[in-house]
Length: 264
Ligand SMILES: [Zn+2]
Image 1 (cartoon, protein in one colour):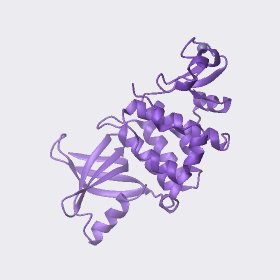
Image 2: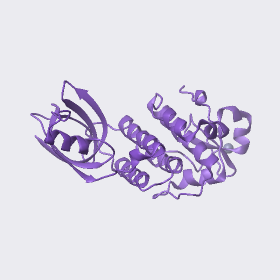
Image 3: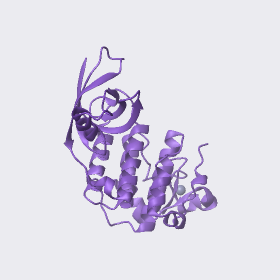
Image 4: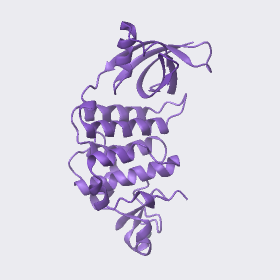
């Protein structure tokens, strides 16, 4: 059977001497793994394909397989949207890798999630155009969390159901908590500002850059990553490298302590 789709490369795994298994996020087929034969050879054809499969471009792909279950072989791949600037900036590169990991972690074969694909692609576009990586991740991860089905409850307190003085966020519940309900449990809750609350409620797209101060960006990023870790059951490998290039101090000042993520 023939598959033709729009896609993003999420992962590349070397296979035998000259091939790669490519894990794509596709528009209509969800997560799709395809064998790319000979792309690690130094031939002309190999290097053209290698270019399309490297980096953070959107591509059009064709794959052929004997059956629905069998892994297909890549028969054509062309760049549809090139994003060549991302690898040139360490923070943009680290942020792009967070996006790809989240997309990989929360996608499944055969199940297309258009909001996730759209959010990841337009986030990569923004990174490529020079958007501030931490501001972008802080504003977009919540949209991805909603897209994969773990959306935040940001309007009503997890304790009393009220909508006044919402001042904390509970990672465990994925929900905001009001000041009176949260006061006895501040150790377990993340304090949130009004700015952060507004953003969690709206999840506007395109992202409203420049509204959150750096500390708020760091805190919202922390909330988002912790929520993803809770939803996925394991840490994000790209989180630590991203915080390292941004500077750990910022996250420490914002109260970022990775060990306080409780999976129970
Ligand atoms: Zn309450």
